[in-house]
Structures are given as structure tokens and as C-alpha cells.
Image (cartoon, rainbow, N blue to C red; front, side, top):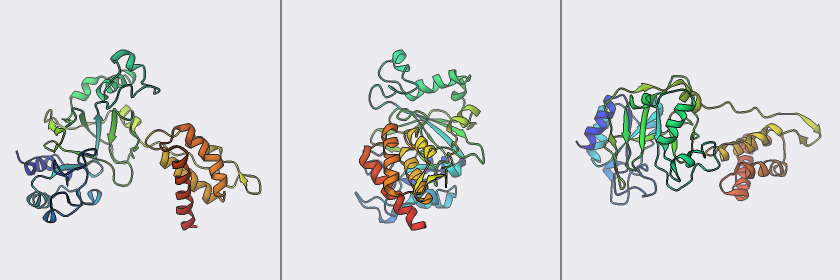
Length: 305
């Protein structure tokens, strides 16, 4: 089947699709990276650009135009307009990824390499569910031998952008402004092909999985609680940064710093309070990244004041 055929099949399931880099042109470290020029301008090494969060569609006329211009383009599925939660059970890229996490004990059971399916089975046991449920929905084997499990996400529920278990169990849903995307069955990267394991209908996401993946409310920053002029109590913000989860740490630090700026705290006060908390939570990039994020927060918030 041609890639146009696979794109049409995805649309027939109600998936909103868009063209992604064809095999051989994407960054090898980022399979399926977005195209950077319109398809009729496609040249070797110069792939084209689509704003996928805006143009993903179920319009077959548009799909026909895209894949006529670029018949080798891979197929992206935008999860937010498609109403999807896609659980990505990945193959670990290095040993002992779960060490120092709540799932670290799985290394004693399975050895140094624990994949996303192992973790998902354990989650089912922990939350009183049966893993067989996950056999009863549409599934796609990825090019890296991982597994995409497709579920219907409930209307009106906002998902988190954070991975439940980073590195082995990721999610793509409606988090953030655009949501996430996955490559559809039929897509090909340097690592191989995406292959549908079955043609089953898409099941509703289990309630416990919805709860695990939903966006958690952010703590409200204390405002105007001055113990003396120029000094405020920001313990809530500090605690939020200190407890931020991987995948959301820099965003949480940015939000906390902007909140302090809005409340009238100086940048030096913000650095004194939030940098130690950011280092404690394990912010990637360490102190240098924390300082850069705080500077950005004060610049952004200052422009609004």
C-alpha cells in the first residue's frame, strides 16, 4: 500500500493527519521531525514546513493534494483534534532507567532493561485492572519495536504533557497548546516501519489511566503576604518547583518566577529562593539553566506589566 493509502486509512478512522518527513530526510535523532518547506518546493535535504497543530485534517481532498505533492511523506496523527490518548510503550535506550524512581524495583524482576510494556503490566496490577484490556484496542508497532496503544480521551478533560514514566512510558494527547502527535501505521523511518498490529476499534481510556494522565491543578502562588516591606512568603512556589516532575521542571520554574515577578519580588530574591529548589528537583542544565529560565521569566512578565 502507498503512503497515500495509509493516510486515507488513518482518515477513515477519524484521525486528523498531516505530512511528516519522509524516510532518509529526517534528523536521525528525531524520526518524523516536521517538514520545513511546502511539498512542491521539496528538494534533497530541504524538507518542507507545515504548522501541524493548525493544518492537521480529515479532509480527503487536502490529504490527496499533500501526498500527491510528496508521495513519500510520512503520516502524522494530531492527537488533540483526533480525541486520542496514545500510550507509547518504548524500548529503553539505556540500562537501569527506572533506578531512583517508584518503579525501580522492576529491575530486580526483569533486569537492567525494563520496557514500557513491563511497566504498563505492573500499573494494571497496581490499579486493579487487567492487561488484557490493552490488547483490545487499536495498536501499532513502532519502528524502534515499541508499541503505540490508542484510546479515546474523554471530552473536556485536559491531559498533562508529562510522561508517566519518562523514557519508557510516554503519552500523546491534548496537553499544551497543540497537543502531541504520533506517526501513523505505514510511516517509515531509518529504524524501520510503523505496522498496525490489528484493526480493532479504539477503546475508551480506562478511568485510572485518565486520572494518571490528566493535568493536575497548579498550586496558586501566595500573593501580597508580606512579613516586611520587600519580602514575601513564597513557600508554595518554592515547594512546587522542588517537587516538579521530569518533563515539566523548566515550565514549573518559569511559571513560579513569573509569579514572583508579578508579585513584586526582585530578580535577586527570586534567584535566592527558586534556584536551590530547581537544583533539588534535578532540573536539566543545573544552575545555569535555572538562572537562564528566571531571566526569561522576568523579561516575559516585565513586558506584560
